[in-house]
Image (cartoon, rainbow, N blue to C red; front, side, top):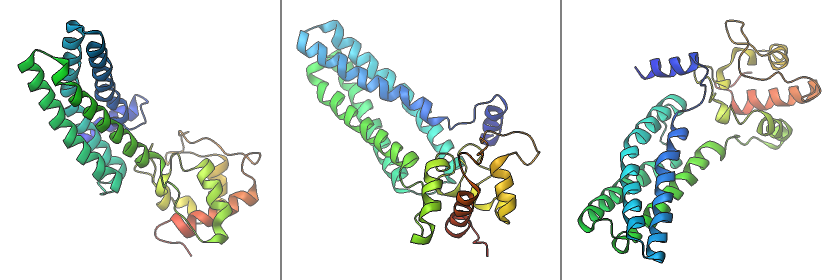
Length: 238
């Protein structure tokens, strides 16, 4: 069923992970609850206080779908790997759930009184900040595996042109076609031809842009190829 969902999204042209878009809901609502709650405390506005609590309750409703989509993306794009940022996100998501439930119950008891909730708002804000940080680590950090000095130039070319979609040798857009096992890596001229005119296995145009000689020269392509085949590709090609 999960594969069918992603296949449908691919069919309509949505080629990105789903979870990042949904995270804006609980994060934005938590930030809003803190801002409105702080304003209520500063201005002494009871209506602001109730509004802040209502915003926190809505954030609680969005917690579950956001986590479910995160698990789906984790299985599809990271094969369920227990990476450190993912472990931290799971931990922080659990803490956020406890805080949201606690804030909802306290607000219900105290009719949204900001004085009894402002600490909850602040803790929720700190938690979603941590979730955003580790989400960024997962997406942007350590995307380019380090190689020996002889592959430093190819590594730099990969980091500048390829790591956005092919972090760790994978494929964030078409997860079933990871770079590390691409058949175009068998021979350099096949790799170069694909680099200049990338196409899907069915020979149709895919999302990957063409890298012409003005952007990556033949010599640079050779250095990139050597880096990929000796550092990233699995199994290592001789």
